[in-house]
Length: 483
View 1 (tube, helix red, strand yellow):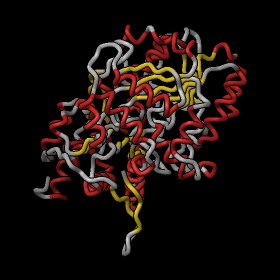
View 2 (cartoon, one colour; view 1 turned 180 degrees about the vertical axis):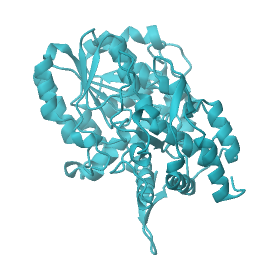
View 3 (tube, one colour; view 1 turned 60 degrees about the vertical axis):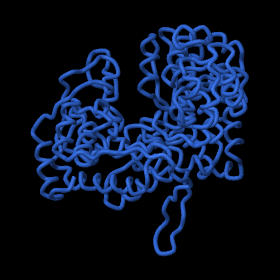
View 4 (cartoon, one colour; view 1 turned 90 degrees about the vertical axis):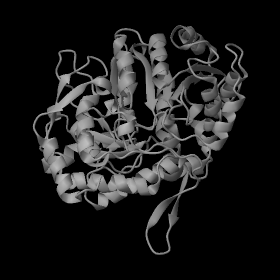
C-alpha cells in the first residue's frame, strides 16, 4: 500500500500506507561468501538458498506479504474435501470481481495454462498473444501448437515512453487471423501486463478492441489476469477514459469482454493458488475433467483451504487503489533513481519490478554469453540481492538446437508487495549503481548442465573467465571491510 507524497523540502517519494506487525530476520553474507554461494548455485539465481539472500527480488509470485485480514481469514477455513464453504466463498468473490458464473480452482497459474492447453490446443494450431510467457509457451508447444507474438513495436523498445507498451498491434492481429484462418487459431491470449518485456501494461481500449476482433472472427479470448492488479493501476492513472472509473468498474468492463479469465493468485490475490473463471458452461465442461486429473477435487484444485480463504480476501483488497498502488510506485521510484545515475532501465516504469537493460549495460557481451544472467549474478555478488534473468536464458532453444535470442536482455528486480521498506530498496539501488560503474569487469557465462525444458529454472552455468574474482577484489577495494 503506498501513495506518492510531495515532501516540503525535496522531491516526491512513495509513502507506505501500512505498518509492519510481523517481522522476519534477514541475513547479509560477506562478499566472498556470496561469490561462493553463487557458483555453488551454478550461477543461476533460482538455485540460491534463501538463507544466503539479503533481499529476494527474484519474483513477486507467492512472496507477497499477507494483510492482517488475510491472516485472520485463514482461521475460518473449511477443511471439507468436497462441498467446502471455503470454495464457495472464493468462487463467489471471483464471480463478483469478473462477473463470471463458473470457477475452476488450480494450484497456480501454470496449472491453469496446462488445463487451457489440454482443453483447447490441437496440433498445428496457433495461439496469438501480445507476448509469450515461458510456461505458457511451453504448454502450448508441448501439445503441438505454436505461439505468435503481436505486441506493438514500442513494446520491445526499452526507451519508448508510450504508456501502454503491452498493447496488441491490432492491424497485425487482423492480418494474422486472416492468414491463418480463424479455425486454426486456438485462442487469443491477452497478458495484462507483459511479464517478459518489463511488466508493461495494456490499455483498456486495446483489450476491448482485441475482444471485438475476436468476436467478429469467432475466436475465443483468454485473459491472463495474473498481473492484472498493476495493469489496473496503470489504466486508472494513464488512460483518460478510465480516470473517473473505479477499479471495480474497470475490472468488470474488461472481464465482460473476455471468454475465459485465468490467474495466478501467487500474484493476483497475495496468496498461493490460482483458477480459471468463465460465464459459458460449455467452456467449463471442456476443462472441468482436467481439475481432478491434474490438480485435486473441484473444490480445492490443489490449494490449501487456508490459502483459499486468504486469496478471497486478497482479491477484495485488489479492488483498493491504495493497496495496488504500492508496487508500481516503489518500482517507479527505483527506476527514476537508477536513471539519475545513468543506469539503462526499461521505461516507463511498469509493473512487477524494475527491469535493467542488460544489453546496454553489458554491450561487450553477445546474446550467446547470456548477458542478463551474468548481470544478475554480478548484482548478487555485489549486494546479496537476488534478481531474475529475463533474456535469452529464459527462452527455449529452436527445434534444431540453435539459440532463440530474446528480443530484450533484461534483469528483473521484482518488487514483492508490502515486503521491503524504502531503505532496503535504496540499498539495492546503491549496489546496482556500483555494479554499473564496474560493468567492464563483468564477463559471460556458459552452460555446463542444460535441461531441455525450462532451463532457466534449474540449469547450471559457469563464468567464461575469472571476472567474478576481479569483481570481488574491486568490491573489497571500494568498500573495505563492509559487507
